[in-house]
Length: 269
Image 1 (cartoon, helix red, strand yellow):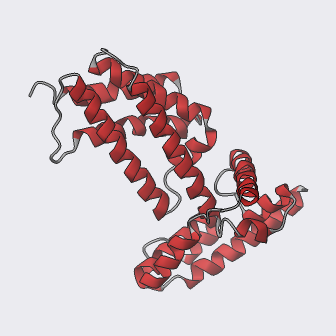
Image 2 (cartoon, rainbow, N blue to C red):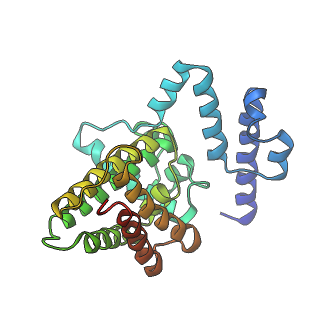
Image 3 (cartoon, rainbow, N blue to C red):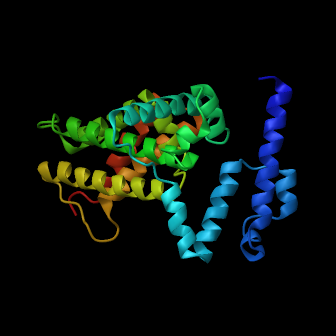
């Protein structure tokens, strides 16, 4: 594709984005930005569409339900269909790594796969359905990784256990660039936000169990110390991702230190 064709495609997307933005109710639009702002500072189309989805969710519960359905993958039942679905997800990973969320599109994905758009829409009605399916898979893999490592800690102190959990999470993100994009770059839809929230709760339970096995009892009433411990470590990874595109050794170490320092304020109370 030539540079002129890329520019034409980008301009076409911005025209569609402005059309979507102009359809947003005035009172809701005012809370985002003015129409002149969008002409001066183009936003990724995906962001504008997500804003529109959120505005519809406030105005119409039925539209909200439809949006949720379109953000979820349709699970194939037959083996051949599952193979096609996996092929789509595999190529989607490559496209995300090359272009990121803002430049991801199903037409481009279909072109790379040499298939029709309808063949992809059959499984994934929107790009968000692809993002959510990948996010769910990575969240499950991260949880399994941490639970497996937790079972191997043996008699390690809670401080060493926290450092090891931080190290394992950092290695997971560095092995999976798409997981960094989808999980550290922020949720792409309400569905992925819910999935990440549930994972944090499950990892909070894991943290609670690890500390309890080492004689450390942490309060469950607000604030939930275990959940905050998970969030503190994740925040360190997110900053490293924004600054460096990966989890550096310095931020991996700082995540462990931050979690230990926070928990230490409650140990022995």
